[in-house]
Amino acid sequence: MRAQQVLLIFSIAMLASFAGAFAYRYVYLQPWEGGALSATQGMSEGTSSQSVVGSPRPDFMLGSSTGEQVSASSFDGSVTLVNFWATWCKPCREEMPMLLGLHKAYAPSGFQVVGVAIDDVQQARDFAAGLGVDYPILVGSTDVMAMARTYGDLSGVLPYSVLIGRDGIVRWTHLGELKEKEMTRRIEELLATGS
Image 1 (cartoon, rainbow, N blue to C red):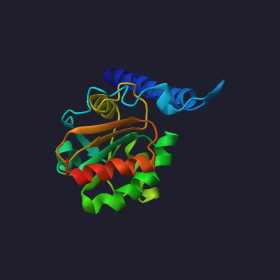
Image 2 (image 1 turned 135 degrees about the vertical axis):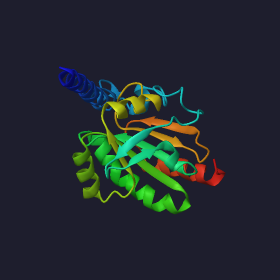
Image 3 (image 1 turned 180 degrees about the vertical axis):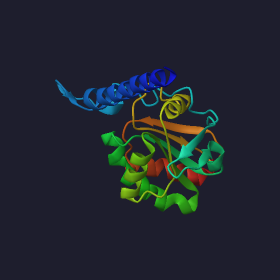
Image 4 (image 1 turned 45 degrees about the vertical axis):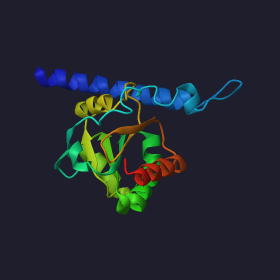
């Protein structure tokens, strides 16, 4: 009976996540009558995450796609982008090659991308391997959804990204697909200031 309850809760959570991703993709990003509505017009930046910007990053302990346990403190001292994603999320998949490029370009300067997948371990591992992703991929289900909420994703929509300074303070959050030009600017600013 207990296993059935856990399965039911997980199924409901996954359906809610799918519904959120669908609503974001097809409501906020689709042209509306009388003009296009961009992702940033439908919601102000940080709408779902204002409470975490300027705060110390929440702690976590999650399993990686390689089976290791990884904590938030593993990335202390680096400018870190925590990117919540899933293999079934189209904008998540579309931004990953760009994230990989930024990781490779800025890792020598102290930048770290951490992918956090709300997914099946094998699917996340296979997808990341297919792209040649060499940054850490953490994987989970309800534990990752709870972590995303503590990092400010109150809407449960993917992709969701959090940029953390070297000092462990959350500097910026973004709901939706990331743009390379903006990410490059933000990464370079944090690396230059040493925050």
